[in-house]
Length: 410
Image 1: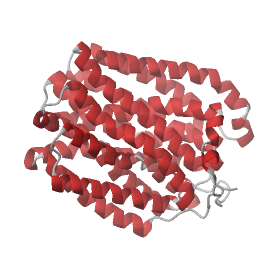
Image 2: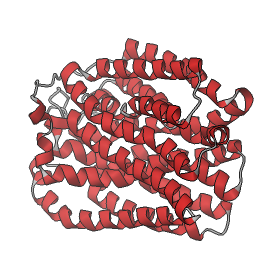
Image 3: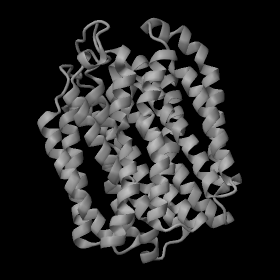
Image 4: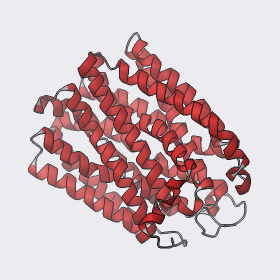
């Protein structure tokens, strides 16, 4: 048996014996710290907006730009993964992020335009998704893809670190100092990554630019991208926006808003490996159907919440569902596109980032135009129901064709 990208693996071997755990650890650490700084403008948003006098729409754009930049850069990283290997691609991305944060700290950020520029640089951190998952996933056979991708993808727990630490550090030292302090753990992880990460024996065949995007000729690629735009888009959009929501809606301090956000984000991060493992066991389609229903109900219920406790409960439920959905989508991707896992990881990740950009920015615009966040939540809940209908439409064809050919459960 070969792994999803052609590397050797023992038939039906145990998970821990079938791959390379140091690389899996390196992928997780890289992904974790990258996600921490990717969303760091969210927890810092109350302090930044107070300093710069930002409107609700500007606050929404401020936290959404890193998400959009990360989405677009994931395509580039997906290509780099196949051209120069995931380890070197990850090293380049980490250097760019560390250098950008150090420059912003050293020179200061003094305008809305400057914050947006920093957001673009932080997009390189968000694009780590297209590197970390292939770095780890290429070591594992199809029967363990869901677990491997889920464990590496659990690095989105870095958003918890940002929500917990950034507001308190900003209160103690100022929000600009947080940008410099973030460089310290990033540099440590970079050294660890360079020492223990190792590219899988599989070497991608060089492709022309047109061949990189060949998967887009398949409707399956677009469906998978759409589903991830809802699951991951909902997760990262909420992770970036909740500090603003809690401070504006319930008048919490930035530190308390960070704690509330951390609790919600931790729930979604913790269950991502569960989503992959559950999809391995019962099929990604079944899991995703439940995910879309639960997420839609929870998000639509947020505007009706009577107080902070009720809103927190609904956000946790939504994040749990979306986190499981993230793992489930990436159980499906390598089953259908095993030969193009690098570029498909980038394309699907890009779609997820675009979904996050939409949610984060729409909540800001909804607040400015209507005085309420409710329209943003209602529309995204509707998108989850549309995704459910689309999944029910394609599931029969998927099970009859590519799933049957691969002999895997979806």
